[in-house]
Image (cartoon, rainbow, N blue to C red):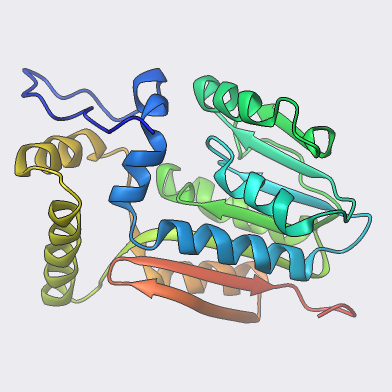
Length: 246
């Protein structure tokens, strides 16, 4: 695994963050050192997806990156047949995913799609996964996408959503940021790296409160919801569509 040094040198001008080839090369190290409980999150989401998957339906991984969750799900589902649509707008990310799938026993069960998650057709789904992706979309697009996901789910189908969040209380928000930066320093990032990445993500990654996400899911139609994992300013939710399989 290549070590993340993307922001290790002082930059004259920090460019907006993008999932380009430089980032993709170090993505696993970057996300493991930047997102608390990342591997635990991926593992449990794969287990949840396997638990709620309905035979004959589709699984959607929207913002699939290099396939960490997809490959974990392939292992979790073992010999069970399934079909997954994995969507990302970063060509280098999908190239990395494609390389990892090459020769894999479940290669034909995963369809890789280069495109906008807001435009992909969503239908006959029993599981939809959005990991750290909604936060990169315009606010209005987020509401529309969650609504389309709800409509595309089968009865009893689930949405798994993980996001970086902010706190409505400014003091608690500052505390959460403090502990998050402490986490990054404990994982070897320098203050310069933290500052330059924060600048790169400004106006690119726009987090919302946990309450805003819950309200959006509720307004889309999800009445069964749970926050199954939370670490300061990161949260994972599950929403289930009511119906005969719920």
